[in-house]
Length: 219
Image (cartoon, rainbow, N blue to C red; front, side):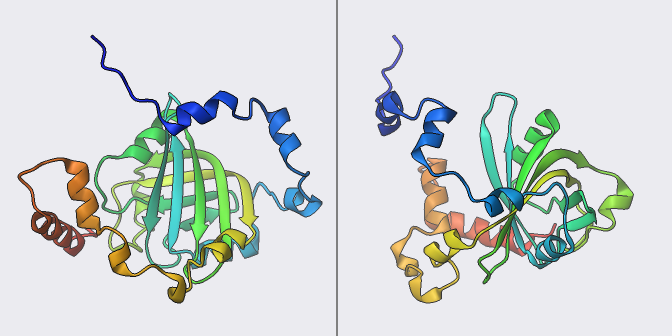
């Protein structure tokens, strides 16, 4: 007998969800001319400088079945290399080795990037074609995260779009006085322990594993 799966809030809300793009557009006013016009297909000197200031980029990808993934990539400011006005390369520093993003890119050849600059409200969206490169002469240039990476995510730019600062201003992301206290959220170890569902493990086990992982984060 097939087990019964409990209905979720999503199952209810999708019954009368917005059915198509035409209905969606009726819900909103039209975008301003500036909001449309500032979309470009290559980097300007100013957006190059933004990428050079970014120490965090979120990478969106999708697999052949449409399953989405967003993963963070970090390094010192400028760790993402601008190869030319329509190409950027992100070194793949040591992570969990699941390769979710890279596998998706190999299959679909697409990726989306959101560049974030700590302490600043401007973000930059870059979308386009993508590939995974292991070419030695490229990897030898991408040592900002400690050493040449095993591979690099290369994005051929099709869209460059600087977002307005409203989302980061609303969030108070860079205002410590608005941050929640540390004890208001579960720790990384507590979250991981719950996800693993392994009764033999303890919080101390997870904390030791995390500490060891951070010691060798560039290897």
